[in-house]
Length: 92
Image (tube, rainbow, N blue to C red; front, side, top):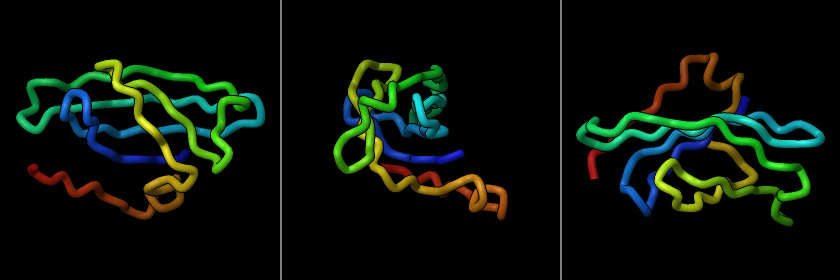
């Protein structure tokens, strides 16, 4: 499992994108939450492998509809997360 964390420029929420890359597709889920925690939702997604950008990244929409670019290098991988990786949530 790969993990990528970002802020959405559309809704201003923090976003965690968890995904697995397979030969035919990239599949995973997106979770977003607002800094005041009034928003906390998510959705699953699938991206055809043919949709990968030349550099290996892909795009998926946030729950709000804003397109989010996921780079080819994730923020963390499953091995790192299992070793106790923690997300440091920051205030804007």
